[in-house]
Length: 359
Image 1 (cartoon, rainbow, N blue to C red):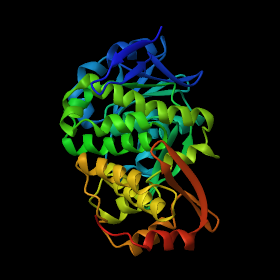
Image 2: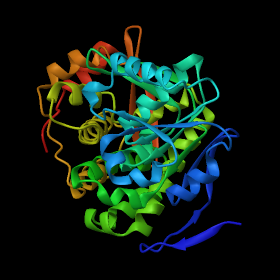
Image 3: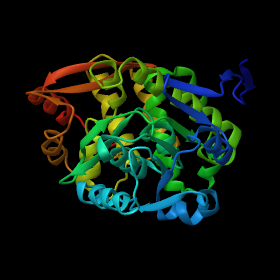
Image 4: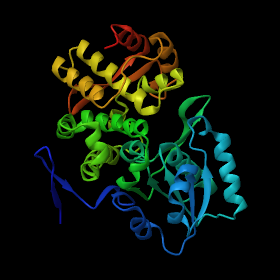
């Protein structure tokens, strides 16, 4: 039976207990420990891979399971770090029957999923996602990977977790900057496929999202449903899943080149550039472009390019979204609808280089 919650912006949104991607992979929003006891396989050894902050904050939660520490730093998300974790699993005698629980933000779940899906040719794993960016994006969808020479997620696997647990009460401990980073991916989800979510976010402030846990829970679930629905149709990114790269064509380059912006901040800039590009091409109305930029600013994002566009275009040429001499551009056509365009790299560079003014 569906339960309905009345939102403060006069919407009625359904809220279900579980969100399924496949029959073997689900996402649950609720209290972490009861859900873990329900979802972890009974009678099997569980090994937790968690970062130091999560271990420090929630050590009692993991007391009944073995725990290995993961360095939750983007520069440490490497094959070398994965090798160290494989060795630690060998040292403690973990075999093919063990279950790995990745607990932390997107870096930790990326690393845990990659280690689990490759250790002994793959063991079962699940995630406890503890950041907003992780809950609405990074931990969902089965992409697991590490960086190579500073380029994000260049080595990895497609392997779905058995479950993802999202406990929004755990987001209270996030610094404002990390919380805001997750909101960029939430806006992205709304632009891709949920105009009601976008409109709802326009009507609330950063402070309300930060303080109202019930409101945040509904926003998180709504964003999750956008991504889960797309992943369910295209798990390995052969087609529709590319739409989830909205704002990412330049975001990874911005993140790498700036050395200062985190992923969400770079995505916000990427969303602004995608919206402006779509408007110049006649694909997106001036009104909707303005709404996207205004919402990002309302949430506190700085949208100026941190480095010259020429530098970003050099880095973008090595992005995973390349396909021979072309690149997939994901551009909004309306709030709630986007298109995937495969264009020659030279054309993409001209589009981005033209009128990328700071607002």
